[in-house]
Image 1: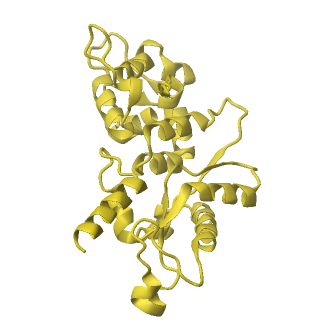
Image 2 (image 1 turned 90 degrees about the vertical axis):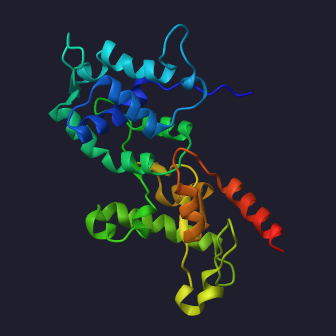
Image 3 (image 1 turned 45 degrees about the vertical axis):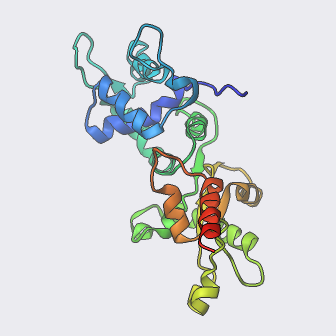
Length: 260
């Protein structure tokens, strides 16, 4: 049995800054609750500490205060000696958050496993680190009304390239089917349905800046699949009850067998 690694303070920095900024300040208790709701911790991190009400995850959040993690980085302030003190984001923290907001929204708005979210946050470099910048590919840009006008054009173009690679890989004889239920828009709707499909990200797709693009895109295909609109929405419907492609496919197969 593989023991899942516990989250580190390092991996909590960006999601914490996101919530501090979103709430215009936040208490430690509310931060614990909202980070738990956002990141859906699992494994050893949800175990209750001996003689405490805290989980190992919530204790790690409390360590952000006791270790002055955000203050030492210059990203936030926290009033000492106040029972219900509020974290407040600093200008440097705001800049770091803004630089990475696309990745944060991508990781926290999809049904990714806790380990994948945690590992992805660990791979995003701090400004003081020499590690390469991480780029995000967000398929939601391709399927949400109006996002092309409102979001970063470079991100949109980058995500379009991954979509084109996925279409090329999964199209056979001019048809591309949902990998979950096998629905084919071209078969059902004719010409207006040709090449229409949504691309589901099974795992986060993040690229290091300067990484060779074509090689990266080919590797990224391991983590994306074509899905019809219905199946894609069912996969993402409930963040607190992660639904895998395998589970959804099994459910559809069971229903199909029952209805025969």
